[in-house]
Image 1 (cartoon, rainbow, N blue to C red):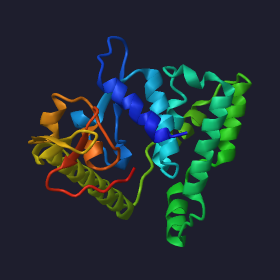
Image 2: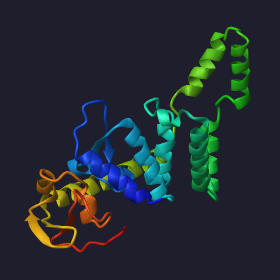
Image 3: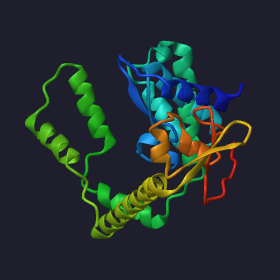
Length: 249
């Protein structure tokens, strides 16, 4: 089965219609793969099409753990009736489990990290304590104020050492900066780079000042076509004028 072809057909069909009922926005190039939030990368799909597209993406990119996790999280959404069957849920559950297993396989924790975890857990109630409270709760007994206070203290935000806080803050801001720069670059490319429009036989038809301008008249994943991720968009071949295209189909 050609999953990429089916995915392209759904996107092409959706780009040439106007939905009147319930619809959901879908990133043609997934955000986890660098897809921007720009108009040419967003398409309106029905809930069923949205779910199917995510299933197809997992087949097209089987090693992308973020795509698999996104599909699994959709399985808990009542908007997608396709996954009510036990068989489908089992498939998604197993796929999600395998994904987590790959992520955590051979993952080692340094002695320094172990010591920091131990230090952070000092003074906190042990797991046995919570089991005791849960057992009393199930039996219908009333939890004393003392127990409530202990639970409240345990739930208060974990206090991290300053070193860890600084490291987390630096990592968060670095990731945010990288995402912002990447998005800006994608948007700038779509706005300013001239593109060439060809028919399916490779004959030049027209030069457009940008993808954004071409998208006003031709609804399709022009950006993905320019990047060589698919052969055509809206029935034409598209290429950047001043940038070589690497065909990844």
